[in-house]
Image (cartoon, rainbow over all chains, first blue to last red; front, side, top):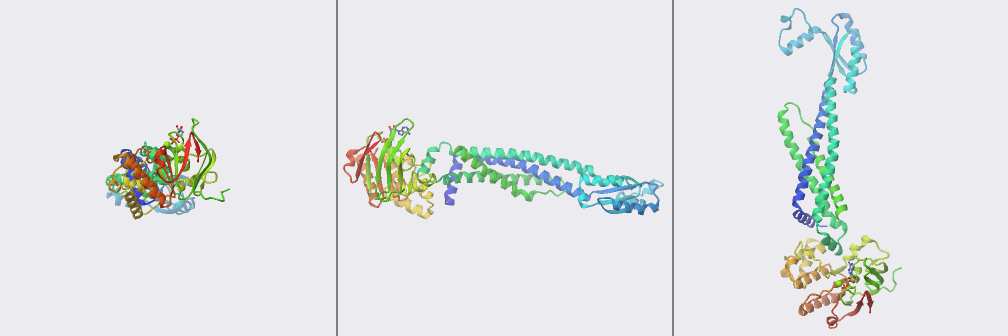
Length: 282
Length: 224
Ligand SMILES: Nc1ncnc2c1ncn2[C@@H]1O[C@H](COP(=O)(O)OP(=O)(O)O)[C@@H](O)[C@H]1O
Ligand SMILES: [Mg+2]
């Protein structure tokens, strides 16, 4: 089949059912925007969880009564705890200096004694940098005598993980919804294009047209509708991103490089919708 | 089980085709040799269109067989049918022109199906339109033409693929005698160029004035 014939036929079909074609394109766009939005949310939450887990450290605050001579043995014991990568000692004086550096106040001018405890800052091994991993390490550190309290931010991680899970579940649901919607629209558009053409299509067969010759333009139309919906959805998401990006300073939004997937999803849905429409209405 | 002495281009052999209500043709045998001009003559309702439909493979015989070119109804596959039809030209009794495109594109469609290039399509369509005296109507839609003009467009579309066999169903049926004579001369010219022609008509008086083998059909029965 010549390309120009294909284009001409598609244009003719579009003229016959332009309203429904446009409706298909824009509805697919809308559905893909939803899908893309939650997809991007999921990607960004995962990214956030990942980057936070690599930063999470455990602060093991030491009991005040701990003797100088007990510190080195404690460090060795902490070093042995499963999941611990590195242990750094922060003396009371270091803590005070850090406080002073951060807040710019003379701590000792307010109090007669340094109230900050000495601590070990514990970096966690790569494979333990998950919510449960970090939590486990913190519990084991806490159990060591001489450690007053082991503090980590695994709860923040847990919360973010939960959001990411929710986003992925919404996404799965949306995907089914989007798939069903797109298939229905593209198939219905074929019904409208074919409309009262049964006799014309019979004549085409009688002058030697194969089934695929008659189907090809209809399939192409479905794919084009899906692809167009995908491209438009991507543009809308870009626009949403630039809006949100302006509000969030510092945090780099991710995932837009996967935009091709959205267009591909549109194309595949258009293709399937076309096949269904042909099976049902031709 | 193909015939050894296979001199015909198309044939019906003891064909039975019946519609749901029992009408149709029975024991229909007919063969068309390459280059032959055959008239299928019979009154309205005799079964002429049914015979033609069987030959262009729209109807399938429940008994007997039909053979056209390399297609044989007992041995060939359904998916071969489009390719057989490309070697046939059909002038439908009701024309069946595409009303959604102009005369040029009506003819061009047949060549698109054949996969011809744009240049080839243009060349052939314009030549055939000139042949049947329709060049000036190329950009009109069929519904804007008179009955006689539509009849000629139907013929032009049937021959634009240079068929081996032309099946014409009442191609003079609605024409005044003068235009009918013009149509007959066109059909003869196509026949002289090598195509077999089978023309169905109810008008025996007219047939007598032209060359060709005459086959009669009445109540679904063919008689030589
Ligand atoms: N689609 C159909 N369904 C039922 N009967 C039909 C159909 N087409 C034709 N017939 C009947 O079959 C017989 C032969 O019809 P047809 O081949 O069209 O005759 P002709 O072309 O010679 O006028 C007629 O009695 C006609 O009424
Ligand atoms: Mg008839």
